[in-house]
Image (tube, rainbow, N blue to C red):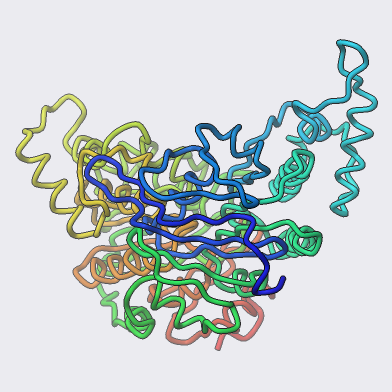
Length: 509
């Protein structure tokens, strides 16, 4: 792609207003054929809004959109697709109950008279799949394939629609490294064939691996557009969040805070497990301590905390809270013992997307005080205002619908809800997954601050650097069993990876 190549997409002065919010403020964005262009910014910076303006989801209040030299106004997503713009989202929008071929050709099936020619449909789908280097049986059900394959099927469908512009919104968030490489191979082939690709990801390494240019947004405004080679990573982070990276690294001091373990722990679990789910495991968490759970996907981290919280029932083991036996067989029992749990499934088990920010936070107060007790409006307003301010929820409007907020701000609202229960032990399962570096840093800072004030935390993250940064002690799990514990002061990243890979037999220092 040459720098002087005319853009396939030219967005000028794009402005979008929501009630009480200026979501985009005169943003320019150019996308050229044959390039991968990363759109970067914190959650709430305006990335999703800009994409939705380009794909016909949101109407533009001011500004112009030009595609292939033609001024366009998109009233619907179908209008954008007709102009050659297709989007593949993090959560694949396909039909899992249909075959791969039916999904690829949906709406464009070959016909024989008035009926669909299914043989020709699957043959044509196979041709499109092979053009992307995918050797898939188009007659298999889509639901039998991994998320990675489903995303590649979605890309193949976009090519059936003869997309000139392909938008990939967080396409790698649920993929392992091999699956990412497979996806990147397809992206490079499409780029080399002249397709313009808009790439959104919170993984900086991947952005630098696959992208040609980067556009940065902050607070709904354009910060700038840069060739990847001209923008070092620390400079990118600074432009995204408006503060120096050194400020984020200061968090590492949290892991070296001294914890008093002379008394009874806030929680002690002995031999807690469930047949076929998790082998018996011990765990202790002391006041003011952050205990990290490290392990690969499927290692048993989530299974352990769900058993401790009562979301799932163990079939053996015992739990004590402050030295007293505790029978926790439901989340209600856990909350009564001042234990709160934020699930990794933010949308399915966390936020209530159709409720407001205030209503989502108040659910925590109601859980603490009982569902039959009426809570005064003044008390609700005070708690909501306190946590919106403390956690930096943006926009700071308690009446906004949570489903319309960015992922990072949704996570902050969820954290606010559980802090409103006044817990002594807070269990956080992947609280920073899928959010940008700014929101991630805000949540990490809050965890560090609260634990220093005496709150006990169990912290799960797939990013081992994050676990090392926050936790004073790390419990390591592999293949649904606990294989050991490490003091974070005695282990670095390479040592932790070695420990994981060798089932606790490797060097940890």
